[in-house]
Length: 459
Image 1 (spheres, rainbow, N blue to C red):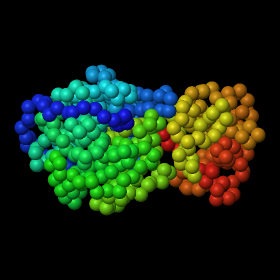
Image 2 (spheres, rainbow, N blue to C red):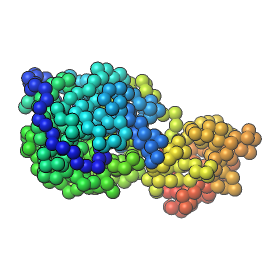
Image 3 (tube, one colour):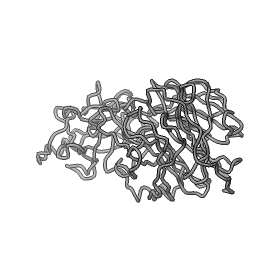
Image 4 (cartoon, rainbow, N blue to C red):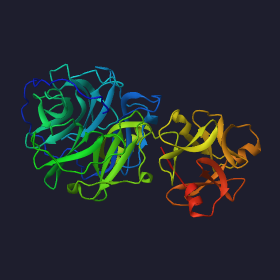
């Protein structure tokens, strides 16, 4: 949640305290035994705000690293109350097995707008979103309720809702309000105040008896821990990580190994995630993950990630559909994607606008239907073709020469067989590769050339 900084004192009055429930104890944020995939909620922004969309977006993944945006990366739910837009969505599976989505009540980047409310949706399966409402977290109108997240506190028999607001000293702290139904809350309490500005609290509950709270401090991601969930019990302990200015920490456990991932988001409108990993959450040390291994949904910002079952994964793909387009990531420059610019083919560092320059429909080859051609999404009459060995985006003139120049055989990646390479149809000794970031077809023999000619076909 990018922010300029200070607000005023947070009042401590809200609705009446809630009675504890007898709900089944199940650690918030932990996976069910049947979970084998992940869902991500997010909103979108891009360099020039061409893709600024402050509604609820949804993506899925089988490994928690490479994501498939659903509904063509268009919203799956739209807030209509409050600011009429959202930031910082969060997803939680509740004790009854259904889901709740929370989000900041803020559309755009007007950080001076204060709201005591957050957006809330209920969902049984993430295919429909019901019960949309605003939930009031405090009574003050001079401070905000940013980046809400929730967890189940078994000892209280209630959910805690964490969010960022400003205390009497003038800096942001992590607050908590408790609820049983996400319709009314207890009077708020300070959950974590280390004495300096902190926002974006992300809580991982019950790992070998320890709870971990990650948060943003001065453009870095830092962790605190406690053996209880009591407000005021957390103590900072971890080594800070960042990639430039980083915010929105999200800790995710691998479903297949003892690996933890820490996602962080750059807090400019660029919308770039970076990921760190550790096999020992208690160590508080993280190692940057190779960007070849993860791909965020296009233009996604400040995400929430939660495990889901394989059935839920399949049902979401069936309901919302996978994108009709792809993006191609460079193997040896994984921050760069294949795009056209001035109708020349090249690889450029993500993000960029216009972002549709990097979206392609891999259609049956114009000269051989067993091969592929790259049809531009934003110039659908144009295809990527070679001309004097350089790749450029040209209109299909219907000739056999054009069809041959625009047709490529997809093969196992020359540098990594799990990736892809593309061999020219009419120059079969040559492959698509980048050279000084420009795309061309060349013979490939060296290690570097094989890497230049290898791409990940994703979203």
